[in-house]
Image 1 (cartoon, rainbow, N blue to C red):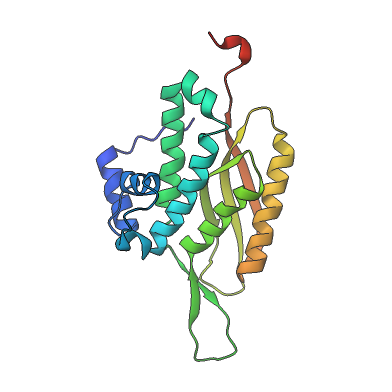
Image 2 (cartoon, helix red, strand yellow):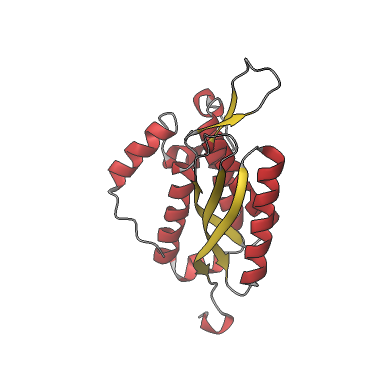
Length: 205
């Protein structure tokens, strides 16, 4: 598990600025309420929407596959979850501006780095058992035609074929980048930072 030594109040202050004034706790509570009553400031914020999508995927996984571990090691599990949630929310910010070509020379089209990060994170839906943590774009994404690398830190569920999962995730990320952006992808680097285990039958009381 990765240790986060950033003071809680300082970290939340940064995330508030990145997500149009909303904190992790606010977004989590809003998601758990079924997004009711509707909060226009959250619904109209692209950064909040990307964060909510990531939180929703994480909640689906942790409420099923990780249920036993959460009961057997609550302190460790809470620390791990907070780290993943912090990455999702922090990286939902706008980031750099990635240009999109257009036949009209006067057009100035672009997509944000945060939006493409959301696209990359969504790849975990196609690869059950993998949770994307940190996601970084290495290279001059703001320069048309420049080659870039995507660096991912992921967690995988214990007992699943790690090599196959990493290969499948790499292919899915590359496919999404090719279909939905004009980035010239050199490579997708994936590091497995955590293996999330579940309580064994013989260890239960």
